[in-house]
Length: 395
Image (tube, rainbow, N blue to C red):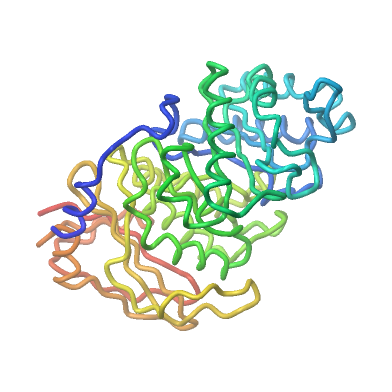
């Protein structure tokens, strides 16, 4: 019971004692959908309407989050000014509308002097920004790291200022750190509800990079605080970025194994039936939201030592088997094939043992099919980032 023993010995602790983030956040973020274009009150309200139409709240998706490009400056007293063209009535009516749909509202800032798009950052304005966000009814704050020091101790201090400012408002606000480095993980639980551990996910190689970065970070995830490998990239060509349907489904599956936030970045207003099926798979969502809060890790790994791959580069021809221990004593497995040709991927008896199992009833959570009882399991996994996700129950 190697994996179970190692992960279950890890302490549980609330991240910032703010009462939220007890399971990974689920929702939507504008960035992978719109980028800076089309960030308007009308579009955000249309997204909230679409959430209601698709009944996404019933699957656990709560947050509708605005990313960069909404602010244009500050008033004389330091209060942030929303873009008057995009948000003519200000931000509170938008938050109120999102709330009227039973959803929660999120917003973006930066710990530096400017955001990544050159809008005003929160450095030196943490207290007034936190109070402003709370007065608008904000439920989720993502704080980026552009125009800011890359010295870890400086970054930790700046994030602690916003953490304390948000807590001081008395409002339960999910705090998402966006620092893009694995060195946030050991300190992340003390600073926020989730912390980015890699660069942005865009093309498939960047998703590979996030997966490989998160291999060794499982011990830092726990109830209330989560390693964040970035937002989901769907397969819809209408979004600012997209990948193949198989790759989008693998990302969703592995994010569940990694106990990661599930923030949809596909084009929600024109969501394909495939992406909708992906994001509403209750069996996979249950893995992500498992109350034990234990992140998975790879038990089988034929990949070379990790070196980041450029977005236009080639992902190594290799495969992995990830395993996550679950609250009911079961284990979730993901067999992912990064190679350009199909591969026979096996979790053999030693792999089962490392997962804490000798024999298990195996269920394919995408086919929604029970496959039988096994003491080892093999499957041919299609090429180019395809995967198979299984739930194993001791037998």
